[in-house]
Length: 161
Image (cartoon, rainbow, N blue to C red; front, side, top):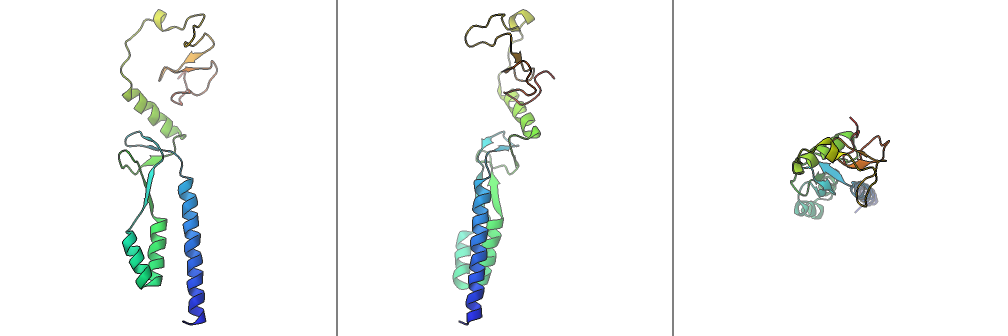
């Protein structure tokens, strides 16, 4: 092997290692996501495109195609919902995700019986486990919140609108 061929192989190996490190950083920072199909909130399942056996075969027989195939696999990481396999995942702290969370929770909650205003108003003095007069209830999910809260602690929407 000539000295220029060895230099090219070393450069290609540095590129591959750099791509692997960048991919590891990107995957570890993925965090929790909301599946828009089923409402699951959690860490997405990730996997590479392609086939590992083909990658090994290309590396053993042909170094340059093996490198190209490896870089393609690394750059095409698939993140899917572990519950339903959906591919549309969004961060849970976005406005769209908050609205979807409220919708999924409202659909999952059993219907509450209609109560009169006297029954639904909080008591003037709160007993343990019940909110006091210095709290407000969200009209969307019923969560108790501080009196001047701009966003509900339960669903993320404006508790007064």
